[in-house]
Length: 446
Image (cartoon, rainbow, N blue to C red; front, side, top):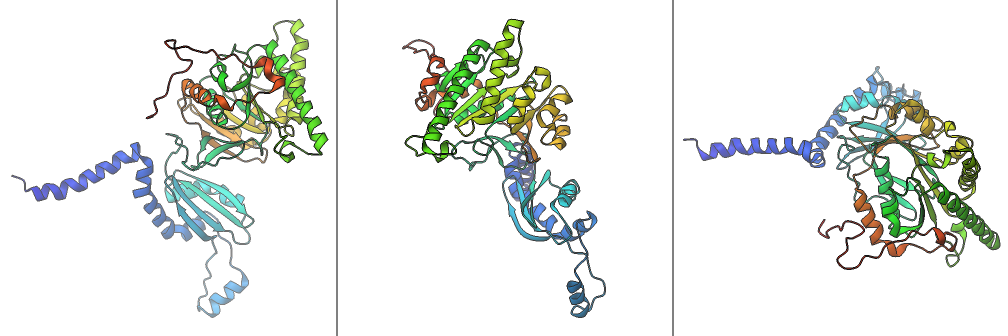
């Protein structure tokens, strides 16, 4: 008969090892915090100098340093100088290392060697971010944070700032309308583009803003958000009238700005400041396509109004969020002009390289190849770029249409009334007792 103490001594370590093995796949944050982070920190401390040397991230020491080494330390062999570590911080998703670059190195040199550093230190990814002149931060992730998306508990929030997705470095991707007023989101069918829009609408529904929807697919995507929408157009004819109303509202706001001598709505006194408006266009191609020549005049007018909003509406507190499968010159006259006004770009999996070029080729050419490698079995993964040339991989968390609609219904009391858009306010049916609800209720325990 086996001694119970022997079973205890052997079984406990085996159970612990098995638990860590399960945690590596089921609870990667726990595994990284308990096992991965200490190993990565030890590996960084022991191999830092040699790794930097073989990766070409060292420089020859200064004459003063060489003189001190030869005269004080009595050594003739003066070692090359790597970037100096200023700070090391661990987190539940990875590790951040702040480096002070020596003279002769630039952030681009470190970024070019990031793939070699990743393999040397055994982490999942390394992103190099310049903090200030002479300082860079290595943002390491210990595992694939985009496999099971979970936004940080302390995601940055604020006025017109909506955490929408998770970056591959473990930080939140925030849609900030004050910094990037207009944006374009592209993606093929089943790429996660609608999921991105749901997360965006769910975040905006909680803020004191007016939401305007344009969904020319008879409202199949945005009809469920009607309780939170100040206006909704579901046909090209309605979209034309709604865009005219938005331009009229913009011109009225410019009159208000001129009266108070203000540059934009945020410099107005709070008592007279109009509510911000976010215009959500579900499929922009439907505004450009025409079935007959008699629709051409209406198409040209809609495109012109969209371009006017893109060029001037930011100061009036009106922001564009345009989505589509393809967007470029092949849509028709005015398409590229409108695209130039949409600073923020998010491109999901696409069917052809030309679509990736349309979305990111003019602002971040290096990101085009990253878009074409997004696998079909990972919906929600996208590449987000900006006008500065930077880009990053992101992924939106799963959110069903019923839950997004429930959030809009919950915050329906925040829907502002804008007289110019009142004719396009969607009707919200009132359900009596015993009738089926508009949206699926969400239990309070979830």
